[in-house]
Length: 240
Image 1: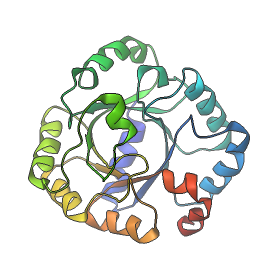
Image 2: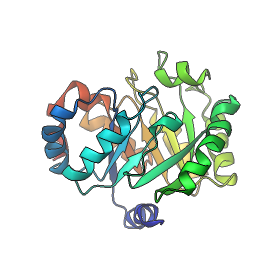
Image 3: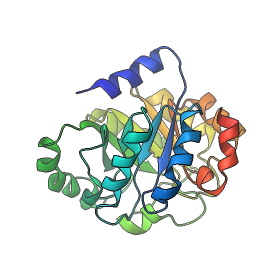
C-alpha cells in the first residue's frame, strides 16, 4: 500500500529529480486529454497530480478514469475537497493546511473523508501543505479563507514545516498557488529542506526551465508545474 511513497524515497536516495504535472479537472477538457497525455508521456514527468480548489462533483472521477487508460505514470489525487476523492487513482495526498488556522482544513475535512478512504484501495500519504504569498490572491486562499505565509519570514515557514514533520506528515508541500506571479524563493526552499528530514514538494509560479532547475538546486525533491503547461504546451519541449 505504500508503493508510490517508497518509490519516491528510493528516487530521492538515488538523487533523481521528480516532476509532477498538475491537472485541474475543471480546466482540462476530456476531448483534449489524449494529446496532452501523449506529450506528458514523452516528457521527464514522473507523476500526475489531479486536483483543484473548486471542482464539480464527478469531474475528478471521470478525468482519472480516462487518465488511467492513457498513461502508466502514478495518478496522485491533490484534493481541494472531499468531492475530489476517487478510488480510480493510485494515491491521495492527505493534505493538512498547516500554514492556516481554519479547522476545516486542519482536521474537519479529513474526518469527513476518513471512512471513504478506509474503504478504498488508495495509498494515503499524509502531507503538510504550506501556502506562501506570491503577489496575488489565489483560489486556495479564497476557498480556505486562510492567509498565506509571508515570503520574507523564512524561519517561521521552516519551523512550520518541521512542526508538520513532528505531527507525522510524510511530505511537506510548499505552494505559491495556481497562477502565482513568481515561484518560491530559493532561500526559503533551501532553509526548509535543511530543516526537515522528509521529502519536499515545491509548486506554483514555475514557468521556465531555469526556474525549474533553480527549484531543484535549492532542494526540492518533487517539483510541480501546472499553469505553465495550461498556458503554453510548448513548455513540454523543455521537458523532453
